[in-house]
Structure formats: C-alpha cells, structure tokens
Length: 285
Image (cartoon, rainbow, N blue to C red; front, side, top):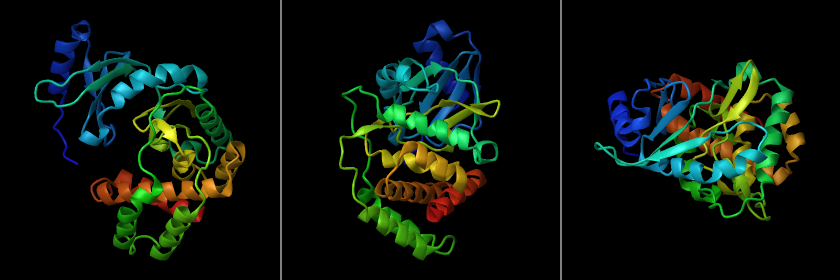
C-alpha cells in the first residue's frame, strides 16, 4: 500500500483553505494515530483525519452518510461527522472532520478482566446488528478470500506461533457453516484500538471505515484483543453467539492478527505485543 507523507503543515493548509471558519483554531498532531489515518486535533472540539493510503479512502463519506442515522440507536458514543474535505496541495484523497471524542484507548490492563465491559460491548453489537437502517453496502472480504494470504502468513510465522494450531483453526473457520441469515450491520474493525474509555469505563466506539452489512462474526475480534477467558465467556453468553459464528470469529481474529503482525510488528513493538495476544487468544478460543 503506497503511503502519502502527511504533516501538520499540509493539514493546516487543507483546513485553512477549505474551511476558513476554522483557520484560527490550533492544530495538533496525535502521535498515537493509527496506521490508516493521520489524526489532528483541531481546537478543542474537532478532529481532522487524513487517510494515509488508498485502502483507507472513503471512510469520511461513509461516516457522514451512516453514523448520524445509526448513532441514536447505539448505547455508546460514536463519531459525529462534521465535514468532508477535498484533495488539495498534492494530497490525493477526501478527508474528514468530526467532533472530538474525549477518552483513552481501551487496554487489556483496564478492561480485560471486566465482565461488565464485556457485556456492555455485547450490548453495543446487539444494538448495531438490530439497526433497521437499510441501504448500506456489504462489508469487505469473506474469510475464504483471505485464504491464500493467511496460509502464507501461517507458513512465514510458524516459528513464532504454533503453525499446526493456526492451520487447524483456520481450516475449522473456513469449514464452519456460514451466517445463513440476512446480513446485519457490522463495525468491521472492532478491536481494542477502536474503543475509548473514560475513568476506566467504556465511552465510545470509533473508526467505522469497515462499517457495512454482513456476517457479524467479523466483529468478534474484540473478544480476542481485549478480553480474558472469563470476560470472553460473559461476552459470548450476552451476545448469544452460536458455535459456527464463534469459530468464524476466531478465524477473523487469527487472519487480521496475522496480517497486522506481518506488516507492522517488526517496526512497532506495540503492534507486536497486541497482535501476539490477539493470535494467542484466538488459538485459545
């Protein structure tokens, strides 16, 4: 994925020219921004998000279209889109401005053992899946579409993780019966890094770039990035997940964990630790 150099000077020019009403507001880069977007705090109330690569393009427009319609039905805060910016000054893609959401990124240390937080997350997913708001696009790939890349990653990382166990889980996930029901709303990237907390409690869910209609198994990744076995059991019980969906969810956690580990772990110790846990917990079940 080709990446674009994004700095505060570029973000400043884009904001000042396209949204002059905010030209006087201070702009501060967030060092902990994710791999898909460069994020800047604009004044005290706004956030600017610029995609870093082509695969992340389209999130701003998607959030502007759908989140205002879904938000009233959800029990946790979600981003409030304000505007979508245009390409400019050599930057090639649309970008977004939303209301600033206070909070800290959720961590295993704070919430991993919390059955209450697990049940709360299950409630969020139940509410999202139950939203009767039609017209959304299907989510991205199916598990089977990731088969070649996942098996290549398993082979490459067999010395880091248990290759036989990964293969067994991946085979089981592909063989599990499919959803077989009408598609439901899915977050599409539901992991620890996209949850905000305040005072040790869940506050918001962010980063809806993967939002769409599909198999809700993809959102079970949160059970393996955040939860302990005990809180994971509470989550599964509260959500009412059947065995086939749970197995597919473990497969999603495995394949996304392997992808992130392969691309980022060597250069980012934080990603290495997070994805190691994700893969290990997915194998654990």
